Amino acid sequence: MSTSTIFKFPSVIRRQHEGPLGIHIDAYETLLREHGYSRRSTYVHLHIVADLSRWLKRRRLDVNDVDERSVGRYLQSRRRFVDRYRGASSIPYKFLGMLRDQGICQPEVDGGCG
Image (tube, rainbow, N blue to C red; front, side, top):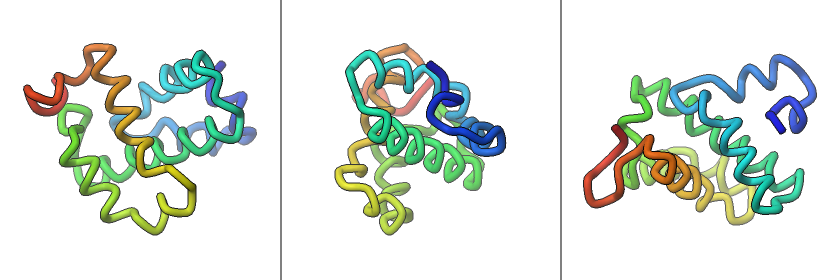
């Protein structure tokens, strides 16, 4: 499954892949599907992760800068957006976990990604 099965319009699909995390969004969608997430829940997860990616891009940060501290700053600055979705504040941390599991980010003790 790719984001094209969750989002209908090509412009929305492209927007989901913007920013430094965009190349990892399809892998995250696959992981969510494998774990049995509903279509609606998957939509929310991808929406939040894409917003995080665009937030990183606006701050000229890349995947190497993603860690608990940067996710915390994102959640503080985007609280109104994230709080629209129940339980969504854990989503960026789940995504960070996937990046670490794939070896894209270093474990927490070593700092960010790399």
